[in-house]
Image (tube, rainbow, N blue to C red; front, side, top):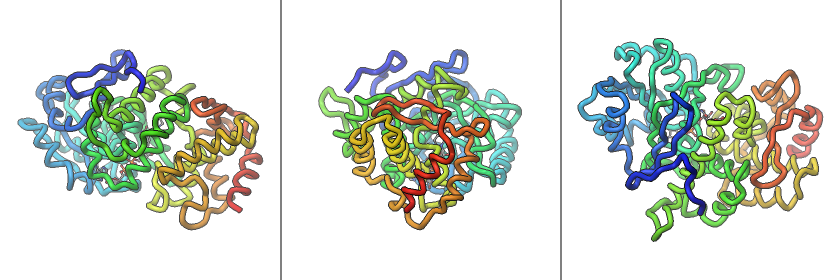
Length: 383
Ligand code: NAD
Ligand code: GLY
């Protein structure tokens, strides 16, 4: 295990990772049972603030009452949206904005996003536009949201043209990643979130990847620290958040290094969209498949030995993520996938932008990928 980065501090059982963005810097607080401290932490940052809690129906069932209890003494109205990707829509944005305005949330008050990436992206976007921007706090309840979507300020919704095409950069003022909330998460969702954890190893930290190869079962299981060794789940969340915070600090607006976080996403988004943003292929599963394809494609281009690609793919498969197109139920049409890849926002003036690898932990951005090369590769994988 490696030592925490300079931006990380330990306060009791809580690990605090600071996202160093100057006057918009904020802490991501990680630990079991932290939800109970939400009210106290919010009051410290915004004394006397009114709060609207945005959550989805499933998360509300498990965690809304505890969140309201944690905000004791504060006005904290809930707005509950349906669970699922289709909630990242104009209709739900309208609903959330209406509820936030109706609750008389002003500058100085707060929106709390209690949920996975869907709720975080939607509530964060609503917070960015209501009254030209109110503050928000992320309380991520999925592994994916704790290690990725709650950190870094990307917010938004989907449109008929594709995923995340309408949105804004709007940083939260605080993220509370209570790892105990993950105990109610279905295993399939946990595994999908794990794809984003292993992504940090694959894109820039070989040592972390090797640690995950050995310890992933304990990350899934959860549980306490062992002697002087940090608890595996909390360690994996901390390492992921540190990696993301460092990249976001360097490149908040994704003009350079932040693109590395899209490892697996160009292929992944195409499959996710072609599968109709449905249970057929969850977002994190699509990222897992996309990363396997990105490693395979890198080997095909002679960037890495096939054995190195196989090692990365083996780990993804071992945890149960899809690594071959045939692992996803149903069929995919090559033309549809190519149209979706061409439409993806990672296309700059017609050239396909891909994140490829020179090894495990050594990713890079390339803009020299021809559509014909991708087409031939996918045609072979589909056959
Ligand atoms: P999600 O928000 O849809 O949550 C997955 C499912 O788990 C939902 O049905 C939800 O109701 C349920 N759930 C959530 N927490 C639970 C809990 N603790 N117990 C039981 N059930 C729970 O999906 P997600 O995987 O968290 O997020 C995916 C979304 O995140 C996608 O829209 C993706 O585009 C977005 N995303 C955004 C960023 C970003 O930087 N903003 C990064 C990665 C992904
Ligand atoms: N999940 C990609 C990013 O935040 O940039």
